[in-house]
Image (cartoon, rainbow, N blue to C red; front, side, top):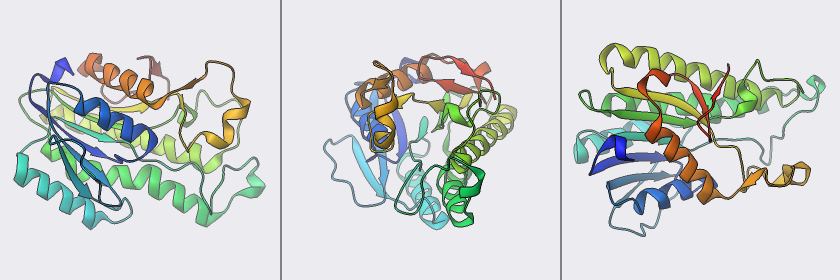
Length: 245
């Protein structure tokens, strides 16, 4: 992350997921990274002195606010905030193939995890970005959240919650630009990564379409390092391509 300079500090929400754990490992191995505040639902065993674990619940704003307060007390500012959380399927939710499968409780879960949680992280963490040097806020989104790219339909709750997240990111970017002109605020599409999130759908993928978590983390950090401030508010793919809303 050359654009952040030496001794930069990161707050990573979702440090134990497939992509999140790979991001954590990549940051720990970056000599310029001084500290990573690594957040998870359960206590994380720090494998490096660079790592400062914290516990948060994406559905409990108070836990996010408390984490931000602790980081402010410990570091003052953080140069980069990464939100590597997300929900596609689970015991009570699975992507819908038809509007007949829509369920209010499932929709509420998708929006709570994919939109509301990241939005509240932004609420409490954006004030910790530096005001006179480059700062980055990035959240994992998905290409299927693009309205203009939607040609297959289905996956109503997941698509809609990611589209809503992309709008939140755009709003954050506009507001940040007024006071923090060097800030970059983007949504990230990591591609299809070999994690638990994608496992039920991997059999239908074309050869070469699936990437390893470490490879995805490298791509995402490279995109964030190279993206100019003028791209703030965009949804960026793992290869740096801007995905239309």
